[in-house]
Image (cartoon, rainbow, N blue to C red; front, side, top):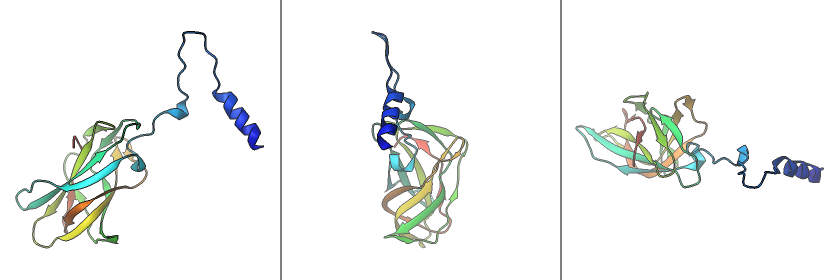
Length: 163
């Protein structure tokens, strides 16, 4: 039975064209979206501090071979951990949640983790989060790694263009 399905599938993708005409790639060969968690890389690095706050930049980059996509607002369902142990910090969001940016190969994006600099911070080395497109949440959980700190009152800014 497996051989018959293989032959049927092969026949379904076989297309004959007149000389000099181009064939379009089958729809299932389209590049996967860079917005899917498995298709991008994320790193956390310290950014410049502001009055009373520490800032950490989460940069997302997509390798070549993935299709550009659109992201909007701040990531949600943000969690923090240190050496695999979940930290009891719930992050809020700040900033314009309606802006839309394009993300993909050669078009990195970033968002800010804003932490109160009140002396009561906890070290962290991983953030997990759900990205959003203009139409809602993108399925799956993205993960970023790097040394940073968090505290009660930590906020996450909207996704912005650039690294």
